[in-house]
View 1 (cartoon, rainbow, N blue to C red):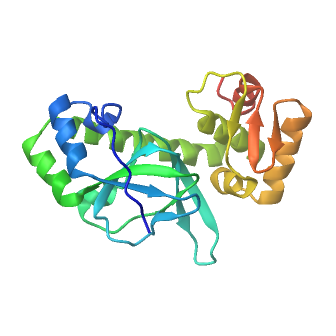
View 2: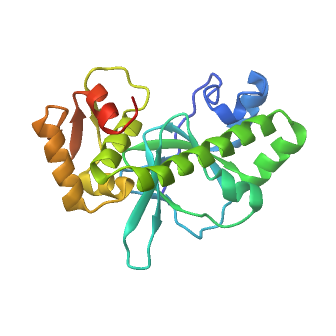
View 3: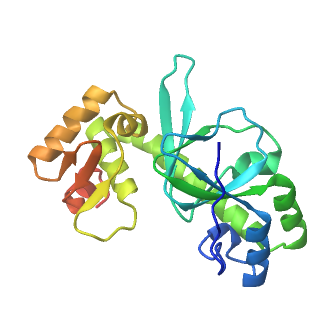
Length: 229
């Protein structure tokens, strides 16, 4: 069950790249047409094959997007944090959800219906630039992940996954609220192998764990191990 969340009064979509080309007044109308929702940690936003009937804009928290194999194993594709969006693919083609989404922590979103979004595309052509940027970013991300699985060993993929989760945070020490099973799903390895990689990184002083959290203490070293410098 979802619980409504009061939206911000002043242009809550200002940071969403998809709507960057719209005037503030138009963004405010879009936000007013969207439905605010909140999700508990571990709560599903939607499942693979569900109807793709809304665009989800993450305002607070974090959402994991994943595929599930017939065996029940998960492959974590990426994590969406504010001001990211998800669900744009099925929104445009009218198909079902191509993946599932789950809140990694308490998460607040705005959900814009497919009808409202298509009306926006019809009446506000500048939004098409944002749509193309969004799809371009998605394609680049998936291309990078495919390349990583070809060219990087597992410790390298673990290091690169951690760097992606750190994002633009410039603090010397960054805490990532992600358990080792989820990290293994993102890096494409077994939990045991990922634990071994984390143990090696910890021995070198690059990070340490605190319960289900990973505390990164040497971002440059992880970047070097991931081949990013």
